[in-house]
Length: 248
Image (cartoon, rainbow, N blue to C red; front, side, top):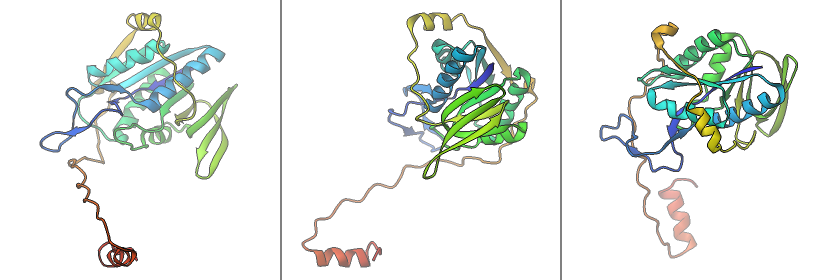
């Protein structure tokens, strides 16, 4: 079984985020960058499937050469090879889905595993758009994945509980937080990752022209939280809730 996983380079969720002076984006200088945690869960699930079914795990990322670090991290976990699609400009989910679709067409995987969302943009759209573009079945927010023959049975997290569905392969599955616990890369795995093949592609080679329907105009800090007040009695509290907060 051949599985394609996407890995995105994002800021560490424990890092203190600062905006650039012009508000155009976040400041990444001096900020630790990591593999998107939901993508890491996808890589782990792909490796588990490979260990039980055999096959190959391919990881891809879209971005600058800096994203090679995240591809190598996935290969240190056990992925077999990597693909970097070089792209410098910010792109919306529509363009990202088109790029991944071109790689899927070239690689012909049996399964595409993606994180349900990236922790920077939180769009949660690319996987669904990819499945629609490919005409493939999809299962989102995977809590448990079982592959049998040409079918994947996915227990997914839904509002109010769990839902189990079946999709024919090839399919697109997005991973949720409780699907698994990603393994740590071993020292031998890290050394092997340096020698594993990593191909690079450009948007021109893939025949993709970015078409962004969503454009980020800018970012701004949230308003400062007002200082608390100490009130003398309940009557004053009720009056302020009526006249100032206007919640009563």
